[in-house]
Length: 209
Length: 260
Image (cartoon, rainbow over all chains, first blue to last red; front, side):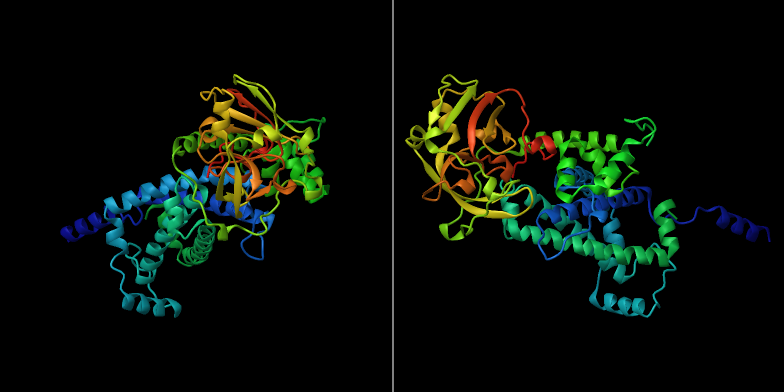
């Protein structure tokens, strides 16, 4: 009797599992702020010379005019790049990427995608990502790297001309940069919708558990 | 939001601006914003009142100065802008200014002189004929506008560094400052490292033809390592100086270095 009580007591006092360590939370929200500033100012910059037959409403852009938007974009880029770089280094160094995102198998992705679409995908254990999550999270990291590199090649097509050439030249790099933005926006829609459907995941990203 | 200032007693300056901006036509609004109210008013327009506008403006200006330093550090004086074959030239090469082509300066060649000022040994003014006699080179390079579009042009003229040498310019000075004949007085500073770049050119011809009015007759400064607005047209004077004298767009908030 007494041993059982002791075990229960021990279980009660044991700290609940940390889902998102502090560094992940800090970098996640820093990235969220930087990304929103980059996207909204980027839309205003796009409006100065649209690639397609539409522009973004001024009500959802940042900076007011091209010059203001460029100031925001080239300030927020430091936050985005430095935070992103720190995230990549820490993610690899701590083994978090390897542990949480890999391996990603096609069969696993298909099975989990079917389950997700029929709302049968369980989220009992927030510490383990399903294959759809693994694919999306690994994918968005790659998109994040590409949007920064394409942005650098638009910013410095002479000093970083080899990087610009890698994207197929200045004009193509602009389209790459835009497509990455669109992918991030799509990701955001899914990401936020799912966070609201599974509120404990949002809680974990705020308080850690 | 803490420190609201009142120009007119009991009238909130920000709300006043907000109302005033609403009744302005779009173009006026932009000019208004660029004029000096700048980011303070911008944050109003974007509805981002959560950010203290004065504070945000100061921070953004500081970061832009920091970005000048970063770009100056990144600038490789030996890195050449990519060049293209004649077949790649954009036809027609676009006219671009903050005014229509009809308002572009119409300069009489015989009346025009290039004025030289500042830290130079020989301050004599140059006629167009005298300048045409200097050795010329051609480059086919990409012009990149701050707006994002780009176009490939063929530019013929005298390397600026050769001219600076000829007039005995102090190349340790910080800037070459250009003044132009555009309405409202266009001007722009060019850092000395960029002025001495081998591809920076005093351009007299587009391809083989005398520079047309649309592209800056009689002389433009072609700087393929800079954004388009740092390539002044209709140039009337250059001054070698250590003083940062500002520029038409630079003063309105475009990043001053704006290297590419």
